[in-house]
Image (cartoon, rainbow, N blue to C red):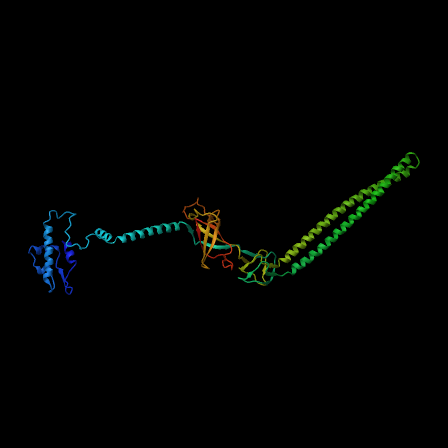
Amino acid sequence: MTHYLDTIFGSSLETNEHSSRIQIGGDAANISRYANGHIPVRKVLRYPRRNPYREIRKLRRVFELLRQEASAPSPSRADSHPPEIHSDSPPRTLAERQRRLLRGHPWRVVILLIIAGLLATASLRFWNYLQSYEWTDDAEIERHLDPISTRINETVIRVYVENTYHVVKGQPLVDLDPRDYQVAVADATANLVQAQQGLQAAQQNYSLTVANLAGAVATNHEAQEDVARYGALFKESVISKELNDEIVRTGRVDAAAVDSDRAAARAAVTMIGQAEAAVKATQAELDQARLNLSYTHIVAPETGVVGDKTVQVGQRVQPGEQLLTIVPLNDIWVTADFRETQLRKMHRGQHVTIHVDTTGTAYKGYIEGLPGATGELFSLLPPENATGNYVKVVQRLPVRIRFYPGQDPHHRLRPGMSVEPTVWLNS
């Protein structure tokens, strides 16, 4: 019954003249009581003064519908529906409204299907895109840092550079006081000259010894011939025994002289070796003195930028003390600490897009190498999972990423800059 009232009146009844309204003054039970004559009509309806008969005719139509419904054979069936009052009455359920909408506008169904297909395709492509890369913001640029230190103990007399200075290979950096080392070089030079003279004297002594040996050998040869000749004469009793004995003694003396000269020649050879060793030792001392003198003038070992300068003029430096640092500008790479779960599909050679926060530019690179262990194992205190309570923590592994050459001609990339690498797994 309420449906009939809503169908005819809606939530209120409107007249065609000046939008006058007739409102239902009660629910469906009151209208039924009015139909039975228990309630006067004035308590049920409140209507405007204009066109009351038209509204009364509408109410009569409602009462007729109510009587038809009461006389129906099965009014309590769930599938029973009241007859439609007119063909353009509004749909009663959501499903009926949807069916009427689809019958009235079939092109909307086609549009909805197209939109659904596009959304499904876009969702699939977006999911594949999310699975095609690995990204992290735990990464930075790294380079080799060349610490400059002194190798001698001396006083600084001149400093040529400051922090942020750009230097080239071989450019002077620091000068130390060279006077002590200049004196050491002069002393080593004098010692070398003296040793060389001693070597010459030893060589001359050897030559003299060899000459004496040759003379002694000749004399001994003559003496041995005399011994043989005079011995034969003594056997024939031509000469006396005293003369023969004197000739034999002379031969023995000459033979001993040969042995002595040979020993002297061997000693001269030894002296030559000692003199040569002395020359080499003094030469090494001179070379060391010259090296120490060269250490007083410190130059840049590589082209780069000066940083971490601590040296000052007048400072007394010790061997191994760091004075400053040279940051090279050519050899750079990225160390990206990916989670262990992100390395499942990573391998060497995969393309990487490197976004640098400082420049706001994306650079191209590739994976140069994967780590041999997690970063935690290289820490000062590596973990000991066999002791204490174990809590699983996702580990990170440092992946080395190399830039393709020619992307940083002005050397704007510096060590320590934060970057965001994206590794393309399908590359």
